[in-house]
Every structure is written in structure tokens, then in C-alpha cells.
Image 1 (tube, rainbow, N blue to C red):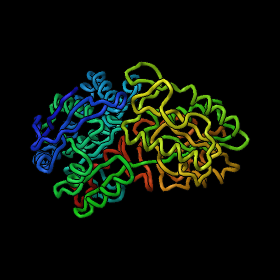
Image 2 (tube, rainbow, N blue to C red; image 1 turned 180 degrees about the horizontal axis):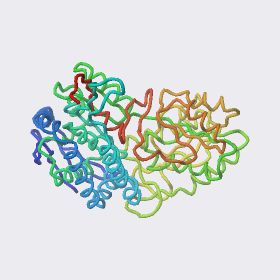
Image 3 (cartoon, rainbow, N blue to C red; image 1 turned 135 degrees about the horizontal axis):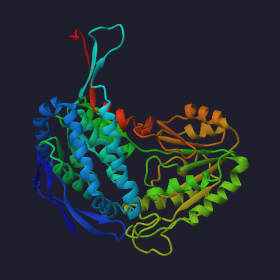
Image 4 (cartoon, one colour; image 1 turned 180 degrees about the vertical axis):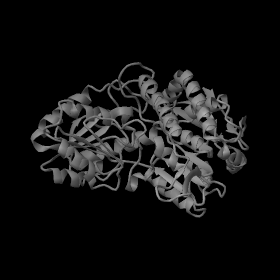
Length: 478
């Protein structure tokens, strides 16, 4: 069992003020794999105090110095990538190949894109033509609290920590207590990179403890949170008293609109995307809406794809899905599968219980429902497991109406060979992102949603801007 008790505060590894042990559970075995300590108010205060003391010098540092620090982080992160993959595979059950390529790879990808964005970032620039002496400056918000989830640990940590560093902020990171090992390793990487003491601090804790303490702390200027919509609402309320900036990246219930003229791989691609990371992605396309003339064939492809989806140990190499993160998630998913059956959805593949070859671990059967109705629970609630719901549509207008009939608005998807139709739908779908015909977002494109998905914009130039205040200056000497 791994034992990492210390927090990273003011450039040092320090023991918690009060020892409150927390067992990290390996979701593949249901056995403890690590013990961490959860922080209390004194630990949070110490970390915030260190960040506050470090802020003036880091905020005033030349952007080139901050970029150089991130470039060192990128080099060390690459060197320690296998350690990072192993940590995430252990703590949250990502299959090791997925952990290497996608989980660890996401962190490297974001770091590189932030470096590119920072080198071209307009830290101080003229307001515009015809306004001599009028300038706009982007300056660090201040001390920021960063709260990250367990499902894509390095994706979300790098989307917050790296732009905060580049903007000149100092920070306290509270990673999820379900997946803390990768963040502790990330703290080692930042320590090796030689960040000035106090710029980056890490305190482990839960949402009710350290999360709430950061959200209400008077010396923190901003909270950046990724997680559930329910927790996002609580953080917003806790932050309101001190008038913090709050950036929220929350849940989703993405619709995947498949038209009859879609490419031959569109349905299988959508099923695999829904099941990736065992369905534990806020931007998963969990609702598949299929044009009626192509519906029966699509359901059959989805059934076949689900049955071909292997479920196996995260230690095993190759393409498969692993367990979901913990018992409560497993039980929630099982309950929603049962709900789908009870409400009359047609079970095409999968269903309740574990796969036949696995009797231990939080493994879920890849599940496909067909003939779904927009009113069904499985069409409205974020399941966060490998469960796909399919329904037919008869017109483009109906598809838009069903896709938009959700409080969420993170990512929607379109599969069609008609370019004019794709362009119409890209504007009509109510979401922060629209991805079409299997094309990923461009490098440095913002990630974020609308409505109950929050309104954060993470990644590239927008991610740096999120950690900046905009200052208007007049009378600037030419």
C-alpha cells in the first residue's frame, strides 16, 4: 500500500496539522491501495498564506520567466510519464494503455498548447486604432483555489494549474480524494521544476472540508472547479460572500445527432466515444439521436459494438474499458440501468450487474438502450458510466429540439455528409462545444459549456484569460 501523508506547502512537503487518514480504494480490486491525510482549516490557511506571500513577486515576474518554468515542467512531466500513467491506472481504474496515451497524454497536450498560447498572449496591448494612450493589460487575478475531480486527473489539473502559473497567479490545489496519487506526483514535478516557494501548494481533502474552506476563504480571489453540477452550485453559494470569481466546468448530457448520410463509422465511433474511460466523461455523447431511415441499422451496429467492447483489469494492456471509480458510482449506474428497463427502454446489450468474467471490482457491463423517449430518466440524468440511450428522429428540427431539451450544455455532436446542415446545426445546438464527423477540437480550443454545465472556458488563450483581470489604462506614454 502507498502511504503519502504530506502536503506540499510553501515549497516543502509538510505533515498535516491533524492526521485524518483516508483510504484510497483500487476500483479493480475494491481493496485499499493508498492512505492519504485529509486537511483541516489550519492546513488550508497555511497553504493560502504561503500563496498570498508569494503572489507579489510571481505576479510581477516577466512572462518569459513564467513560460520558462512551464517549459521545465513539460520536460519533467514527459520524463515521468510512465509513473503518472501507473498512478492514474491504480487510483481510478484507467486501463494502462488509456492511462498512458489519453490520461497522461492529455496533460502533455495541454501544457504544450498553453506554452504556445502564452508566447503570443497580449499581456499589454493598445485598446485599438484611434485611441492613443489607451491600453489594455491582463494581470493575474491573485491567489486562486483549484478543485479537480477524479475522472481525468491530469487533464483537469493541467487545465487549471498551468494557465494559473502563466497568468502570474499563486494557488492552492485540492485534488479529488478519490484520485490523489497523480496530483501528488504532479507536485513532485513542479517542485523539481523549481517554482518559487508558495506559487503552487497542494492540500488533500474532501469537498465538505478543504473544498468548502477554499470556497469561502477571504484571501482567495478565484475558485476554479470541475465536477458535478450539484457541487458547483454549493461552491457558487459559498464563494458569493467574498465576491470571488468562480469558474465552473460541470456535467453534461451530450446528444449525438446521426443523419442517414453519415459516414459508415459514425455509429460505432459514437458508441466507443460514449464508453471511453468507462463512460466517466462529462462530454460523453450519451444520447444518440438517429434519423429514422437509418435507425434500425444504427441500433444493430450499436449492439454489435457494445458486445465487442471488452471489460478487463486496468493492469491489462490492450483496448478495453476498466471499472468505474468507486462503489457509490457503481451503485448509481446500476440503479439507472434498472430505471431504464422499468421505464420501458429496450435493452439491446448489457444490463445490470458485472460482466460474466468479473465478480469483483466496480465493473459495469457496456449497456445500450434503444427506443428511448425524451422523458425517460436515462435520457435526462448524467449517468457517468458506459450506458448509451438511442432514439429515432424524423426531422432536423425535432433533433435540435430533443438535443436542446436539457439543462446541460457541454458538448453536442453531429454526423452528416451535408456541410450546410452541419453548419446550421453547429449554430443551433445549445452547448459550449459542437464536434462533427469525428473531428476533435483544435489545439488550444476552449473547453466549456453553458447552463448546468457551467461557463468555464479552459484551454489555450481562453484558459489563460480566465485567470486574468483586465485593466484599462489611459495616458500610456508612447
